[in-house]
Length: 161
Image 1 (tube, rainbow, N blue to C red):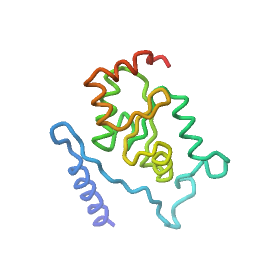
Image 2 (tube, rainbow, N blue to C red):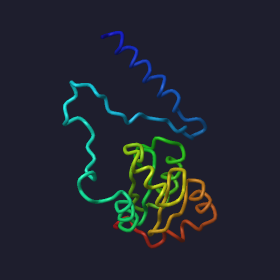
Image 3 (cartoon, helix red, strand yellow):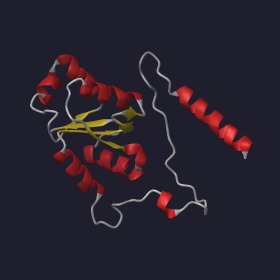
């Protein structure tokens, strides 16, 4: 038991060292979201899909997210803890404008990831929507920031919303 715990601990250190910053950027890290089939795992600790029996499709959820949130980001991780350099860059640029950022972590749900790709017809993440309009990824948001276009797009969104 102690040996396997030590190995798991060392693997964790190795995984973290691969995602250390290089010139301020983080590399995307892949995380497993599979659930163990261990019979000792109690149902309370297994992830639950609340949409499964609700009659609401992921497409409807995404549509509602984009409609209800002035700045909506589908990303790897969450704004306070991005798990990919591109997601981190997008959040840093958006935070510069002090606007509320709503986000969903696509790493939590592979079905959500695929549904977002289908919704926007865009293959990569993060995906940023502003005032219901699909903007693009971190490269586009950065370019819009550099040209002043992003400031114009976000000017009437306040942190009170």
